[in-house]
Image (cartoon, rainbow, N blue to C red; front, side, top):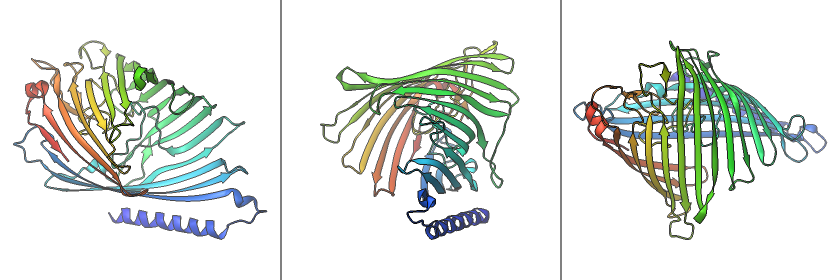
Length: 426
């Protein structure tokens, strides 16, 4: 812990010195340095959780409280042109993550003493008006985050050592991507490995923020860090547009191919949701119906892998708040409504129903950990139902509160494969 404190102090000193320098070199009207701008940021997050029967077995005494703390400090130096548009950004951010517990074991995988989270240079409008290049350690998010995302819920946030070239016009955009996933190594500097990397292109067309959207992508992921070397290609598209009665529809369908060891990869996934916002009603309800499916392996003994892999997907919110599922070997129907009693207060009740796509493949959670792996015998497809309520309250522009409760009603698959007690989470 003392290393974390020392790191935080060092970072604060660096930010403080930078602030003094920025203040002392404040330019006059004839100095070219008048176009430099310095910004600083700090984010502090404290989270408490209570978990009960997450192993579906109430006879095991593993219930208890978890405490999470995350601190981020950052600094951005920007060079602006005469129109105050960015020419160059240099961004540096450190992150410290800690956990504690009561009556249960602390989450060791969510601890990372103060380390470098982001450090990149972003060059704007190269060769004219339509090319940006960002190089260095950075967060990467695309589309709705179903394949490449930056999950903010996790105490340790995902980041990449990457180079991204962003081409854009007022309506069309495309990114060329090379990224290496940074692996967390507590008490050591976090590093990426060239044995695991992602390359590809992500492109799209959108007239304006609230209009028709069409995106397409081709992504290649190479993972040679395990005993099963894998090269996985993902090609797909996403469409978003308005249906009659002002219903917003979002559809995404990716297909995967390649090889995992000696086996060929052939897998698909699909997402569709329908939402309707009733702004003239009390509390301005927004209803959303969501359908998800992701392939599971049909026959583990053949020469083909049908398990869809969601790459570096978003976690926690897309497929229930309990993190029991991700876009892999699953079928889901979800219904939620967002309510706004006041400008600061939002309520979101939701229910999710889950099935396995294939009984011959494992059930995995949001982080990819196998929860149940029984692939033979008499089993049901239905895993269970999650019922949840989330409450958000913005105290001010910079202070935000969030609370939630979820209950999981176990279904036939869990009952057929072991302990089957319900789950609670706060």
